[in-house]
Length: 429
Image (cartoon, rainbow, N blue to C red; front, side, top):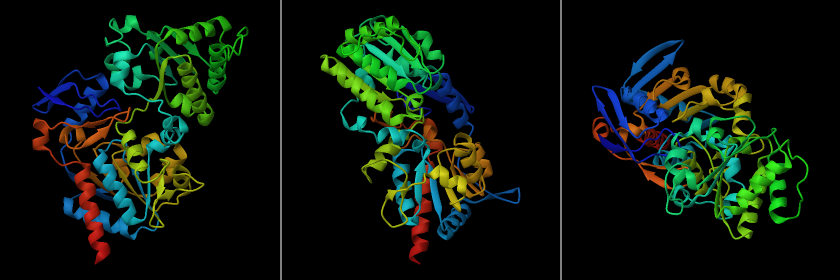
């Protein structure tokens, strides 16, 4: 077996082994989600180009498909380049350059919550840390609106709960685990402190905790349905911890009160620091390279968001977001790269996107792939082993080449690059 990097989720595990024997994937150290992803990637037939018209499929050469895709994108009046969440940093950078060439709109699944979160001042306050630091020092681990047991399987086993660290020599026995969510989750089963709160009650709960920690509130009555004595127990556990990390997820950000909740989390962290404690907050996002998108966008604009290059310079998309514009049918052509948005975006937007002329670049098999006029199916990056991705804590992780990489080196980056070069050549002629 050889060392590879798993790109199934934002943890980007680089301590796993794999081999392919007679097209059968064998692995060591992978979680169930990671191994299933590796199996799926193994069954890909490599680069394949398909066109669809009137319900009929036709296999094209790669050159034909790229030529057709280039012509469609050049002739588009309102093109959208969307996806990118499962692409390498290099592919995202090339995608932004292509968007600029086409004077198009660039957006991704990250805009559904993550961009809003990463635009908040909480990410300019030095409140973040890295996962290795949490492994070695994390004493109180608080999952707020996040459920890693079902979405990022090795989060607890590799970094936050079970492993032994420098300042937590007994691993889970040296740590305190808390989970706060609007419903019972699998992650709650390993928690010392479990709280189910009503939707939208996060900031009220945080305010009560801050009040108790600072002595400004004498908790005597329930807060968002939690008895005062129970809440005081959580407050005391936070006060005792020398190193607290809050992993906040979509449950906190997509509650309709993202700004208020993130402001409250930042205030809670600062309150703990005021008590002489180490305290941090980190987002919990699951797509393999959403953070790579954020990092690339920050190189272009101060606030990571959807970008419109219609004027020749990158600007925010305006009052209406991309999903609203999809719903209204504003875009006449959409290039989808490294994502399957017809599965994950809201129904009204998916309906609007499905009626758009679609070009797809990425792994085979998704709904978006099968609904596209042109599909350029590529090897998954876990197979090609080329490029870098950005882990959820903003640490860059280089992919590792292995036996399969030598047999199937081409990936989405190669296709996007050649497509961009073709479009540039046509625009100059």
